[in-house]
Image (cartoon, rainbow, N blue to C red; front, side, top):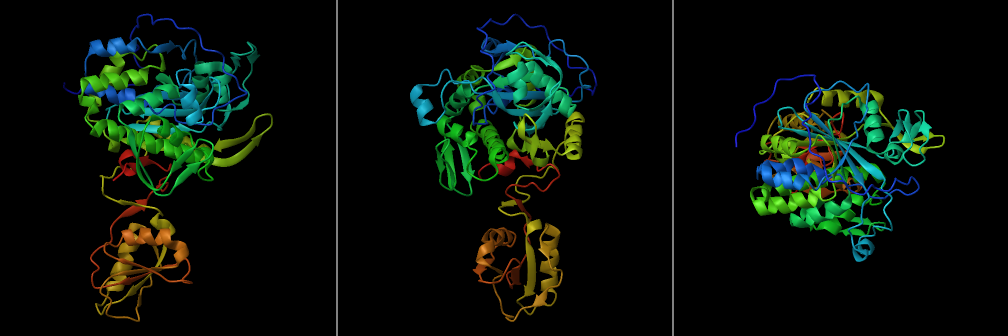
Length: 493
């Protein structure tokens, strides 16, 4: 099926198609602000809806699946909204629904007791107007926010705008207050609202046959029960849930968890687009049913929207996706009556959301394999170069090549005591072994040599085998203004 032509840019609001009445379901219990789940990745499966539709299975199948979606109206009576930009903006919200998970699974995966119907995961997914790129921006649940005036959905009382943590907006005013608060903070107009719980998350991961994840170091979290040794793993639904919930594997807490969530999303997209699942009608149906079984969406996101978007994105791949977290200016920002919050960096955040409004990529695109991923960014590694051969100028050539790749060289290469070095050597203090491995990756064929007491400056003794310096970049890039990483940069090699 041909790709729909790119539509001309327009600032008009997205056209909404009339929808047939959706089956009515029992109302959800009001969210309780007293309990908040300690897991993060309930929104990840919703991105699959967009990708899975790319199989173009047909209108009839999608229409039947459309009936499984519970409808909400997060845009009711909203006024003074931001001006529409280019492309499509979807707000993904994760809740803690677990009614369909057995007691045994709850105990095994440490899911706690009754759900609180609250949220601690929010992401803006921007789909470019040409349908060739998806930009995912995570909004930390503890972000400092000020709600617009609203009626509390629990107490029924009317509140003026007041400071809260971002996740409290859902507890007080449900989807509508959540959308209003996010739009007020970002000035990005939200076109569609999608809400999922982790019941569909576990089912989706199992249906696709598990998701490959690579870990450079062991991951262990006593709260979720996660216990992964370093290496490559294929996570099934329950273990995947532990992976994306974990908050205590390092000192980064929620920010570290969001990075792992983004890696999981990239790995899920890789799995869906490379395994042939999208080309198998039966698998497509099964996966989509797993995704949509626990989804709530706005009335305007229906069969036609999913099919149009899916057909246009049928060539979507991990390299088409980019992930980041809104820039944080101040950690532990104390607010009376609210507690410790994360305050966004006003200038960087504005530039980030301006890029979304203007449909611009958040990162400079590089072809896969253009730079090898390493544990430590070259900008953080100081290097002294020595010429270990009798070739005049080799030291200067190696120094310049390393500097152009980002390493902090001394720019003053010297002659080594040994002039017959055949294989290039990376000498390093054992305490800086991760930096040494990153530097060695930039020098193909080099030898690592530990030297106690050498200190933080690494030494490169250029040998007769030197040919070139390979481009490298940080495993957790964070080098651009927004710390953006593309999907193909975090997938397992």
